[in-house]
Length: 219
Image 1 (cartoon, rainbow, N blue to C red):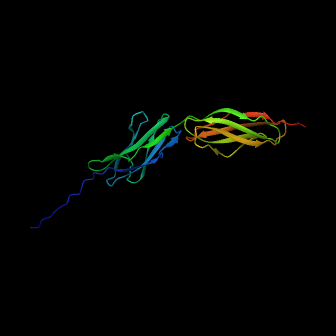
Image 2: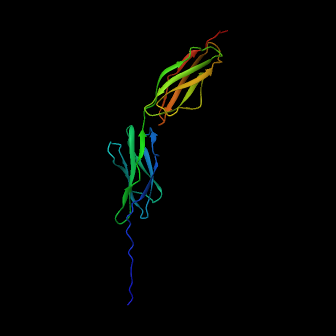
Image 3: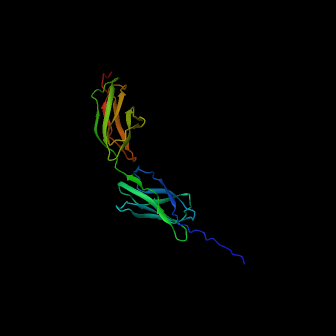
C-alpha cells in the first residue's frame, strides 16, 4: 500500500502590521473634524480597524472602519465630532480575516495637539518720529498657549493695503513683531498699519488698525 502524508497548513497567528500615516506624530491642528489615515498589512486580509484615542480622557475605542479595507492600502477613519482642545494620543487597532482573527495595535501611539486659541497681542506701539523721510519702527507683542509661527505687517498708503511676506517667529510662546518703514508720503497724509500673526496650529489674529498723520511742512 502507498502511504500518503498530508501536511496541514499552519494557522495564521500573526496580527496585521499597522503604520500610522496622518496626522503625523506631534501634529498641532485647529481642525474640529479630523481624518486619521493608516496602512494595515496582513496576508489573510483585513476584517476591521478601530481608532483608539483618549479624546474623552480615557484611551478607548472611538470610531471603526469595517468596509473597504485592503491589505497594504491606506485607509481612513473620520472623526465627525468636535475634539476638545488639548494633548491626545491615538492608535489603530486592526484585525485580520483569519479563521480566528488576529488583532493588534501599531507599535507606538502618535501624539496630537488640538489648539483653536489664536495668539494674543499687546503693546501695539510705534516710535515717536513720524516725519516725512524718516524711518518709523512698529512693534507688537504676541503670546500664544502653544507656539508662534509667523507674522505679516500691513501698511495702508494711498488707500491700498500692502503686506510684507510672512516673517517667521522661532516657535516660541512669546515674541515681538517688528517693522521699520521709511515714510515718503506727503505731510498731512493719514496712514494706517496693523500686524497679523498665526500660531503653529494655524490660528490667526490681527491687531486693530492703527493710524497716524505724516509730520512735516504742508505746502
